[in-house]
Image (cartoon, rainbow, N blue to C red; front, top):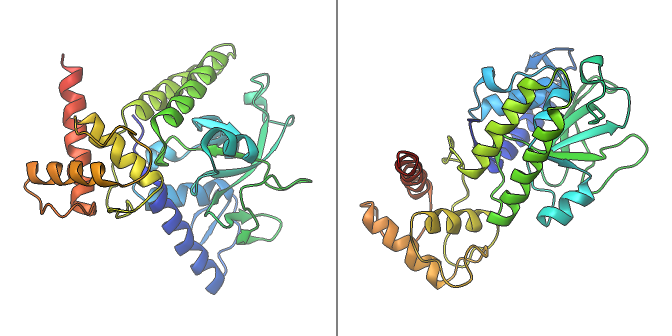
Length: 291
């Protein structure tokens, strides 16, 4: 099961690295993944590791391997159609239909020749042409003629998606598994995809400390995540369900959960409440698996 971090944590790590790169040049170094130098794959893995993903999980063989490990891939416009936006923390790719390394020949997934991470208002990447870690333009739209033209949602990142959006990701992962079964060297990829599909169905959140604090009046993906988790635990969040709106019913559910956990019932969902929710949800999932 893939370790999960939040997109908020990944964005924060990306902005920290970008600030360092703007003060002191971090050179492009092939196969590098440290402040002494990194390539595009190494930059992404550096950020994942900084946020808590074990190196043994995310140290893959290039941007094409990361492209194929994503649980959803497509154009920025397809991402917006599917999920309402390109979430911050999505991986950005420069993709071509042909030219993939020989090991991927015939799998139909093309050549992801370069990658970075979307920080919401820009992308951070290690640029071979510029020779350093740099910021580039990306606002969730395809950049033609050699720019960012694909995005991927990583198996290691919790994007705070709704239940329906998670289902779309799961279906994409299932489709990817079926496709991978037809390629002679894709057995390991098929096993990995199955694991990531299970991870999105029952997330194992390793990093709740960097989740956004939410409270009454907040809206968005973090609230949808909160409502989904509360519902999973049997709390009533209102007739609208996980609508991303922290209203009266969600407030009441949070307070009931906090009381049950011995926390201050102030309806503010910060580090302690997120951690308690993650623990309770994992315990419930384990109990369900036992029968």
